[in-house]
Figure (cartoon, rainbow, N blue to C red):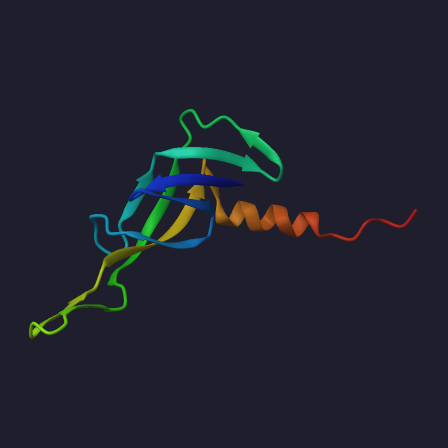
Length: 119
């Protein structure tokens, strides 16, 4: 099962067991968060209703992105400014999508790959 959630002004397609990097949200590592703004949900090619649909996640870490250098210059005016910026972000592990956990997804996928019986 998958879902499309919106957080931090961006949209992410997630399934149970996925790891995603999002804009910083409050919480320490190990804390549980709920992503309630679900835009789309489904399984395979079938879509489901998203009313009351919740995606549960666990915060793995609070981190910073790579440094971005901002350099401004005006030629012939001896004007040079150099600044750096490191955006903060949160790394999440999706625990369940709509009540379905990662273990249930892997068990169902293993059942799908069983060889067909010879007739």
